[in-house]
Amino acid sequence: MTPKDPRAFHVSYWVAAFLGIMLVQYVYVGTQKIANIPYSQFEQLLRDGKVAEIGVSDRFIQGKLKEPLDGKSVFVTTRVDPQFAEELQKYNVRYTGQVESTLVRDILSWILPVLIFFGIWAYLGRRMAKSLGGPGGLMTIGKSKAKVYVESDTGVTFADVAGIDEAKDELREIVEFLKNPEQYGRLGGRMPKGVLLVGPPGTGKTLLAKAVAGEAGVPFFSISGSEFVEMFVGVGAARVRDLFEQARQRAPAIIFIDELDALGRARGFGPYAGGHDEKEQTLNQLLVELDGFDSRAGLVLLGATNRPEILDPALLRAGRFDRQVLVDRPDKRGRVQILKVHFRKVTLAPDVDAQKVAALTPGFTGADLANLVNESALLATRRGADAVTMNDFNDAVERIVAGLEKRNRLLNPREREVVAYHEMGHALVAMTLPGTDPVHKVSIIPRGIGALGYTIQRPTEDRFLMTQEELENKMAVLLGGRAAELIVFEHYSTGAADDIRRVTDIARSMVTRYGMSTRLGSVAYERETRSILPGPELPSVPRERDFGEETGNAIDEEVKAVVDASLKRTIAILQERRDILERAAQRLLDRETLDEQDLNELVGSARGLKPEAAE
Ligand SMILES: Nc1ncnc2c1ncn2[C@@H]1O[C@H](COP(=O)(O)OP(=O)(O)OP(=O)(O)O)[C@@H](O)[C@H]1O
Ligand SMILES: [Zn+2]
Picture 1 (cartoon, rainbow, N blue to C red):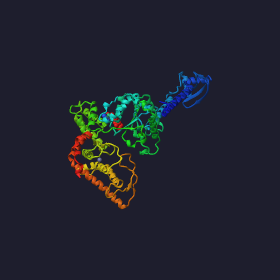
Picture 2: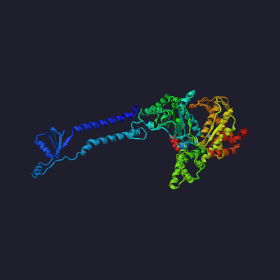
Picture 3: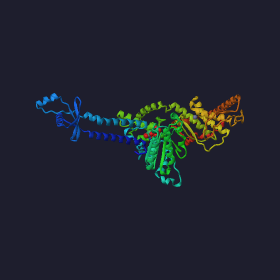
Picture 4: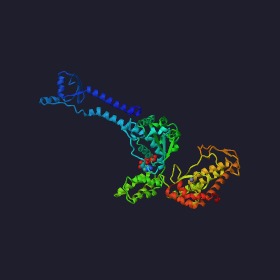
């Protein structure tokens, strides 16, 4: 399309070559037109002395005439046996020699080259399209694919996106900005250029991006990072440039890059570690575009990824994708809302209830739920029913759950219960002990890699200094999960691995760096770069040992003693509040997330109990 696209050159080149060959063929054959004459006429020409030279094969005679006949100077005729010819003349039979059809020759000289040419073109086209990693074939060559992905009106609004209200709220500002980019910058307020939507697959990141475009009524340009993989050098960068160029012309607009991690993988990460020129060039071009565009022009770049941790840090720097919006798996209430959106598309029997279906589908994402509604409708159709019943949903859930379990994405009911008590253990200890950060949210919805549930504490202030008591409370909160599991299930599970690691770090630091152990005194035994205070975690370097083997053993024992004491204390705290733990964990199991207010209602009385009473 645009001359900048390197592939465009290929196509015009091929077309020109093709036309050229046709022209040469035409001119050549045209001047060489051969007269096809009867044998008797040939004899006449011979007798008249008009034939200059001939070539004889066993079936044809071809020759040149001294003067052109009907503008043709070459003739061909079919040979007739001379004796047979005499015979025929004797009986006065008129005869002609006729050259056989020229069809075969025509095919060979015209159609075959054309066919071969198209064959080669199609083959190259397919190969090229394949190496570009995208769909398409013949027709897409030379066209910038970005063009294909523009939607003037996505037709999606926030009403179509349910259950992820927090993410929606964060994007409302972008909508306002896109509706009126000039006004927005009036007071000097700056819009973020890039917003990164982070969340597991199928949670509606693409849908949300489209909804932002739909709400603002701006065009939606989209491209997927994975399309850039395995592309010719230079093509990816050209496409990015082209994409931004087109979007700029139609600003205000949204540019959406799905699977940003495929493109923006940190250098030296994964299978392409070490110079993968093409991706690097494409990434660099993206960074150039990001740095170059002025948000007042009304362009907003949205990116999506489910692996933010592997992104090149350059992408996340200020002025680039400097805002992240979490798009999480929905909890039960969220699932109800999502189901209601998708229920609009099908005819439901009166017994179908979004609450009931939501209760059946813990761990499902928005995409899973959309799939569920669809499957149920298919089952009903197959039955020949005229509405989808609760039974169809039950059957469809069973099928889908089997699939999701295979892909290891769902907890079984027993695991959910363990996770609920574990997380509630953390939360309850935190809410009991003074000086710990308030609990913002508890959830048993898996998040990220590895975390089966989570408890979010929101620090009230930045901390630069912590007392021994505060560190001990922090350890107790971290051990709350393990303690709850021990009390309720009397088991040790792997779910506490990360908690244990962090507790051990704190205990070791207390003993060897902060001099908080009475047995070992206020002596610094180790220098470690890792800090337990909030802030960037530095990579841990091998510890420097300033002590002998005996002291080393004493340190190990002391660390163990600190952790053991902390666990004992934590167990006591929870045992004291066993009934609250039960009630809150059951509520958590039912609702899947509890916010600050829910927790305060459930646990409110816990603070009243003196934690020390437990010791
Ligand atoms: N929150 C939601 N509300 C309503 N429908 C949803 C929601 N989330 C997902 N869906 C349904 O699932 C489909 C797929 O979601 P979408 O492609 O937006 O997910 P995604 O997060 O972009 O996934 P991926 O990371 O795999 O690209 C949507 O088209 C929609 O039908
Ligand atoms: Zn835990």
